[in-house]
Amino acid sequence: MIEAPPASPLGGMLRFIRYAFMPNRLQYCGGDENRTLLQYATAGVTDPDLTPMLRRFTGAMPYLELIARVNGIADPFDRRVVEAYWIGNELLERVEVRQLHDDMLARFGSRLTGRMREIILTKAPAGARPHHSFHVIDIHSRVGELAHSMETLDGCRVSWGKVVAVDGAELVVDRPPLELQEGKLVLGEPRRERVLRQLDGQGFADSAAVDDWVTLHWGWVCEVLPTAELRSLERWSRHHLTIANQTI
Image (tube, rainbow, N blue to C red; front, side, top):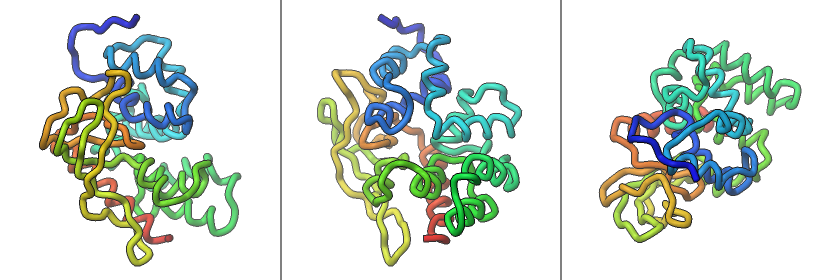
């Protein structure tokens, strides 16, 4: 049994798990270790065994490593790097066009040809940054293994909702959905939804209350989000929707 330490600021590894847990449980990414990851995160502990588990998230790791390298940060699981990738912060601004372009070329250049290759490689000059919304909407939808549909795009992106009710293991939230309107991706008017915040009594948003804002990934409540970070997540999400709409 992993015992919890005294309360301390949430570390990067533990925050990474909050967002990576549900896609891992759904077997979309990472190893087969979701129960272990849930135990680590709810207990609030890390140890050397956690690092190789998180490095198996091969979709996220190159972005974390790029953000860390550009900003002179040794640890790709530094809390600032993890926040930049999932939520968005000033570290993204320091990633230059050439750096992201070269990263995309190294990762996908040999796998893609023709128009698809051209689209991927024009995203950095168009203003893309190594944020999860960019990966979901413009990269994973084209080179990933998941079916490219509105449902998968909406589930895979990190979204947000305002809590209107707490009901045991679920929350009722008002959440702006991703929609296709007149051939363009947009965030629609908030829609009331039930989302999961606990499995077997364990979760990452036990303190969530009515009027709080929470983040969501594949229908799972990742955390209660402060207003400043909510604004950053919305800003970067809308930014990458605009870029995606250039090549839809």
